[in-house]
Amino acid sequence: MSGRSFHTSVDRYFDQAAAYARVRPGMLAQVKSCNSIYRMQFPVRGDDGEVVVVEGYRAEHSHHRLPTKGGIRYSPDVDLDETIALAALMTYKCAIVNVPFGGAKGGVRFDPRKASEGFRERVTRRYTAELIRKNFIGPDIDVPAPDYGTGEREMGWIVDTYKNLNMNSPNVYACVTGKPISMQGIPGRRQATGLGVYFGIRACLDRTEDMKALGLAPGIRGKRVIVQGLGNVGYHAARYLQTDGGAVIVGIAEMEGAIHHPDGLDVEAVAAHRRETGSILGFPGAETVTPSAAILEAPCDILVPAALENQITAANADRIRARIVAEAANGPVDAEADAILRDRGVLMIPDVFLNAGGVTVSYFEWIKNRAGVSFDRMFSRHEATMKQDLLQQIEALTGAGIPPETRQRLVRGPGEEALVMAALDDTMTRAYDRIHACWKERALPDLRTAAFLTAIEIVAGSYEHHGIFP
Ligand code: GLU
Image (cartoon, rainbow, N blue to C red):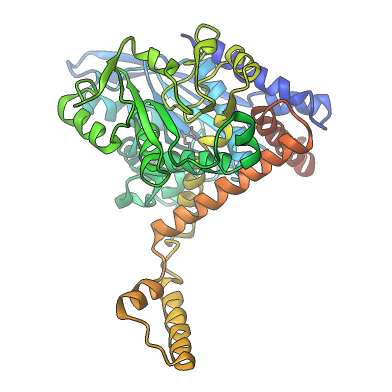
């Protein structure tokens, strides 16, 4: 499916929310439009020595805050419309979680799974050089990150290329996020999107009155969950839902097929099985569901599409049996399906809120790179010492001795990963409170409209305050 229908859906979501916005029409048009687009074609040496022409894109949707921010996608299906739609979602996402960036997205049209590592590296370095040439990358300009088909390794190649061409800048590491830890990445970034999905679902399910309206008990514990996609987002989301939340993962879908077990699948074991055999199919005890997409229609409480856009459309929306659809992917429910599901009383937790954990932790990584120091370094020991003093006072006053293991646990200063995760939890919880309040106070049709409206008013407000004219 081309990116056009995805782009149309995102525009429809924008328009539905814009109807409620206290923003003048010209400004609404500015918030909606994509500011700059760079489409490139460049030659890369193929593994056989032949020249391969590769097409790539970078769309900077909104410059109301700088730098612009968003991942890079490698896929044979990437096109300009898809890239623009994803860049727009980044703008709204950053606004909702209060991350001070504009939205952007990049895409390169090739299949990374069929390419050699050497070819992927040559594509990545050349794409980075193209971005540098046109000023579409830089710590203050536009900061890429991983997305579908890319990961830490690609981000490492990007920072290396950038660093070598900008040797005198002290900030070079802040030109991209999602880097390996050894290249100034941040612990927790890899699982951040999935963990954010978990925090977001938890915030939603904690609302007793909303759950009552759906006929569900509050809380994640015991809820039957189906997850589509066991990639970086789906895997971590499923894992936290199962281990921290106590959910029962009854179905998992991947490219090769889907599996189902009414008593629950052990996410970690399914992932290990896939690593060993190359497929989730044949997982001991699980029943195979064919075609794979049929798993979306199996009964469950929460359906978590964590793969790609346009998975739930008018073609299958009326057969979805979940009470909650938690959009871990970008754009998994198109605008037609959205209307059908809403009429059927399904609660949708929108992507622009739910998968914003990735960019939130990217923001922490960017701050760390700019500060040139990790979050724990300056105060971890100080905090440990303070807690030590406090415990000694308590012992002196009460005359009771605190056992050494308890003391050790209590006085330890926080590590960087713990700080990142706590800040992510706080960010997702506050963002949910905000869009939920908007939904209820302004009597909006649903949470998605509330999320888009929240974003529109923030972005418009920041244009109003900072001026849009030179
Ligand atoms: N690609 C991710 C997203 O769609 C992360 C973006 C980022 O960290 O900048 O949100």
